[in-house]
Image 1 (cartoon, one colour):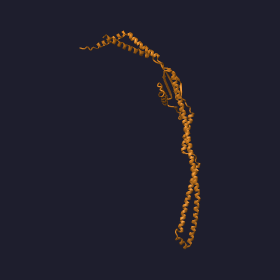
Image 2 (image 1 turned 120 degrees about the horizontal axis):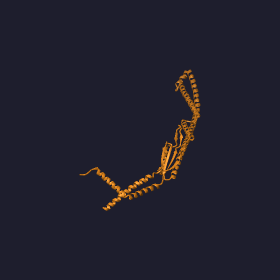
Image 3 (image 1 turned 45 degrees about the vertical axis):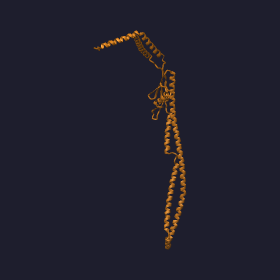
Image 4 (image 1 turned 90 degrees about the vertical axis):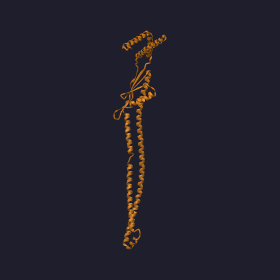
Length: 342
């Protein structure tokens, strides 16, 4: 019957562990030698490793007061960081750069490399780039506003010239129409006077005929009769009087329109709106020129510090690795000897 007593397994494990420790102690010279060599190599590497330097620059993003007396930034911090990443990390392949935004208006830049001089040069280059960029942004904003004002001035002048030219053309057209009416009215008066004269004469003839029945009957037999002729003349007279009235009214309307054109200046609703927009831009430009700007600048100096390294940890890890490696070597060596003896 098989014995499954747990104490037997414990006794066997204790025997194996004792044999292992005994075996390692017997090979302590090799164990110590390999461990010492690995630990020494790790120490040499640790102490000969080139030191690294961390440089830090703190930049205050410039600002200004808005129309509502609020603080505005020349450029939002997120937009600035994105631009810096594009130009210095992606384009220039400077991977160790770190950008941090502090309270929206402070930008912290960190860079680590084995050369303190390289760190200082790179961070100074970035600071100069940011300062020039923000100076250019402010200049562009001012120039943009000035260009918009100039464009509005050109539009206003063009509209004024267009309106003036149109007004002069309308004045000339209306003056010609008034002159034409001035010529037509006397002619109409002459026609009216002549027709009145004819009517008076025919009415006199009609009275004479009425005093002589034979002549009256003889004239009444003719067509058109004298009464019909006088009636026709009266209708023509009415038409001429109406035509004269219309001509007079048209002349009065044209004279009033000409008077309005002569008194009207070159302004219009369109020009008024453009002038309002121009005044707003001029006020904005004046505000930009006179406001108290805070320029983008480096806060303090660029700090350069040596990166502290934990030298004990690599040496300790080298010791552990050496101890493990020496144990493996000893066991392999012992196995090879045992195989040869068999």
